[in-house]
Amino acid sequence: LELKPDLQDALRNRAYTCVRVGKIETALKDFSRLIELSPFESSYYSERGSCFLSLHNYPEAIQDYTQALQEIKDSCELYSRRGYCFAKIGNEQKAKVDFELALELNPFDAAIQQNPEDSSSYLQRGNLYFGAGQYQNALNDFSKLDESSEMTPELLVCRGYCFLNLGEESRAINEFQKAHSLNAYGDVINQDPWNPTNFLERGFLNFYLEDYQQAIEDYTHAWKLGEQS
Image (cartoon, rainbow, N blue to C red; front, side, top):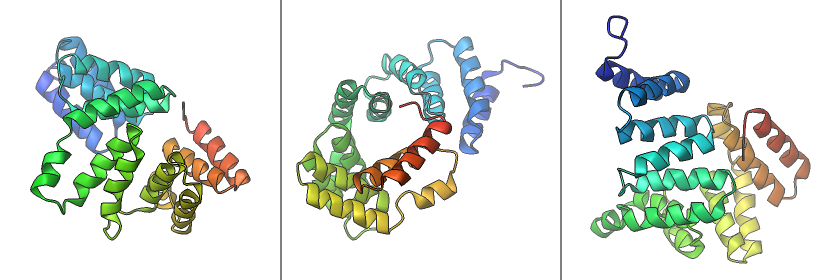
């Protein structure tokens, strides 16, 4: 790139490599330059959108995912990611529509049909059901993970939200208490202390457990780290 600053293969490969090693700002600049050089290459918008998502810049991510979806119309992953971004900025209606589209395109139905023991597919489909507001379906899929390694404290929180939205408050609180006893979000915060989303989610957990002072501290810390929701 020192010799040929606009060599697209080198720009693209450096961008992908930077994403893998966590240099998101550098990757973002490379994908932006690639878009200037090839404004009709939808994959560059998709990848730059994911950079914006990693940086919690949700409106910018939505714009890039929308641009990518004009060409890549059958991507479960793109609809799912855009749906997540819509949820983060409070547009629940558009988030639900995107998660429903992702469900229509999802590859997990076929994977589960081929292998009913495929816990990873149940987890990923359950997350889509959750985003689409289909809480009973989400619970049905999450129940497949009860004895598996995928049943993390964070997933217990998600199950709690399902019960909460289904009007089963006592079962929801029970899930939240189990998650709290397992130090929900503690490990991921230690691994990535600059990610505001984990503090935000732990704030919600503390709120529902009526530990309001800790919830305030987590919300405040998430905000200081750049949480925009």
